[in-house]
Length: 130
Image (cartoon, rainbow, N blue to C red; front, top):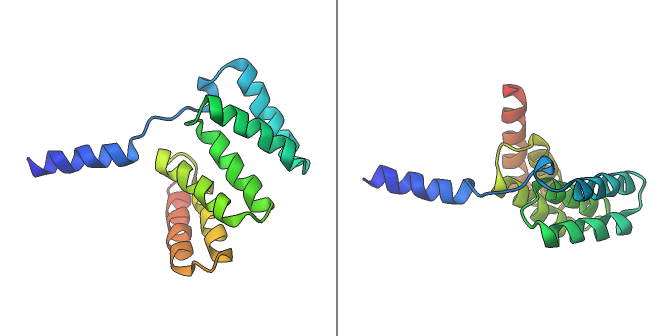
């Protein structure tokens, strides 16, 4: 009986429902691709505006959180980057190993060395399994 209770809690924590790029509308997919392009060209403010609009409509759109984390990292807004990467991992720990890598590097820059080491170790473990 306790075993089933534990599993129920585990699913509640790690089994959160989220949306991926192919689960949102075509217009929103195009907007996300544009935000990625803008970010790649250093036009962070325009990219952020689009990401925030997408997240207001689709708060569980996982790729938007990963992109938000990368942009915030590039802008040296490290606590915000950390929160975004944690959100990705919270939605799905196996979605993208890059989230662990970026989280670890971000935590290292925040002098959170123990956390950084843990997340970078998870990254390496997941990366070698592929």
